[in-house]
Length: 133
Ligand code: ZN
Image 1 (tube, rainbow, N blue to C red):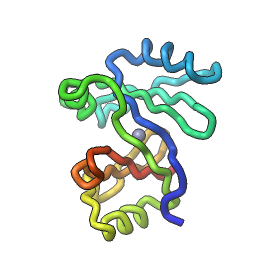
Image 2 (cartoon, helix red, strand yellow):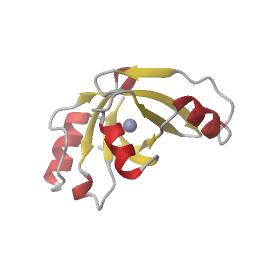
Image 3 (cartoon, rainbow, N blue to C red):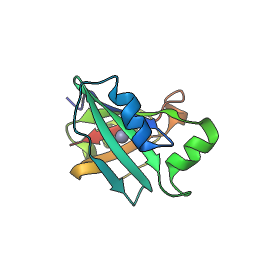
C-alpha cells in the first residue's frame, strides 16, 4: 500500500503562539514544541487531535511560500498531508497517475520526515503533501 492515512492538516497562521492557544482549546491538553524550519522560512507546531495532527505554520521570512499564501488567501487551511510508506514510490505512483508534482525529489520535512507536494492545479485546488516518517 502506497497511501496510508491522513497524517496531518497544515494550517497557515499569522501568530503561532496565539494559534497554539486557540487550537489547543479544541484538542486534549498537550505539550507543544515550536520547531523552526529555516530552509522553508517557517516556524511549526504540531497539535495531536486523535489520530491526526494539526500542523500550524507561521512564516518567518517574506520569501516563504506560507508568507505568500497568507498575503493571497489569508490564514486558514493550507495543505493536507497523506502519510506514505515510501516517498520515492509515492512520487513515482502519483506522477504515473498524471498529477503534477512540485517536488521531483523529496524535501526534508520536520523531525526527519520526507515530503513532496502535489501542485493544486492537478488536485482541483488543494495542496496535497505526500509525507513519509
Ligand atoms: Zn505538512
